[in-house]
Image (cartoon, rainbow, N blue to C red; front, side):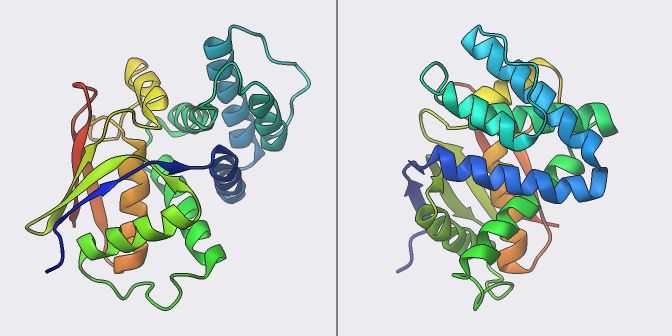
Length: 228
């Protein structure tokens, strides 16, 4: 009998994840223009500076140089990918006033790029209508490319419940967004894992889905993904 609950361990390569985010930024730049990328770089470096206590060089001009710099500073702040996610969220807030359109579209394109570049889901893309089974399949591909955050996923009557396991990979970025009032249009808090999971589900299941973070950092997080 297929399990309705899975525990996901962290399988995470920060260099691969940073590469995916950079690729997604380039996709979004085609929509928003280079000014958006410059804003991402600015805010990502501000986040990095706050974590390391060091002022970044002034000659950094593009996302590749941002990634090179924050990677070099990994010994002082290992979770460098949080800088990029925060930069995206804040830039989108300034650019559009919320994270609900740009950031979610960015996550969608990032996951789409992972799936399409791997080729491992070509035969099932849009063919797993059950969103729980679609999420399980996505987690399998995320494991392969070493981009999995620790979480528990529960199948519950037409929705998928996400529960953070101790030590979420992305919590630094989410905490910073919450502190600055960077939210969705609905006013709900953002969650990087739910953004990625819902973007993946919309691809693998072929169905439109949405998400809601219901508990944040208390001491872990909990939310749900559902069809719309």
